[in-house]
Length: 158
Image 1 (cartoon, one colour):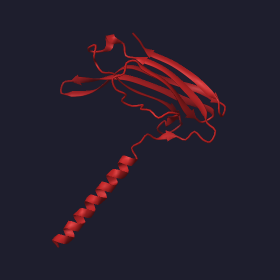
Image 2 (cartoon, rainbow, N blue to C red):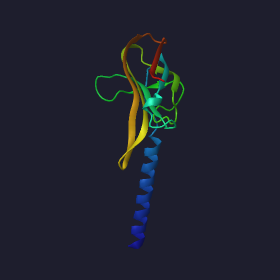
Image 3 (cartoon, helix red, strand yellow):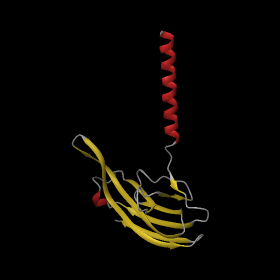
Image 4 (cartoon, one colour):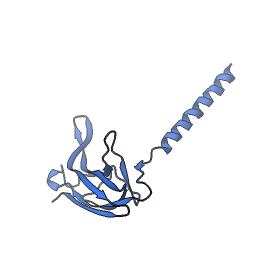
């Protein structure tokens, strides 16, 4: 009986380990497939949290940003950059300067450029992000296959 319980416990542990490894393998960023002949959107971004919004001069600023395709239902999928990079929780960077090209489906589409600059602030016994600078920009484009559109944005300052 003890041997059967021991084997069942080992099988359970191995099963749990396999599930954790499978979950970890699936944690990478998922991007929209732009199709066989995509267009490109080049985003030239400069974003800064102004010093006057910081609690102190050395306060760390984090950034989240993305370019997404606006779809009628469901979550807006992220568009794939031509060069892999981080888009979430980019630490201790102020200003955030990016020159990134994304592969996008050709034709008439609406895109969403989101940029959030934030600090981790303490409130009572809890801490959490406090957005200090943001940009939410919807862009309508009609792009031919293989074409490139340059989108320049500046947010924040001083």
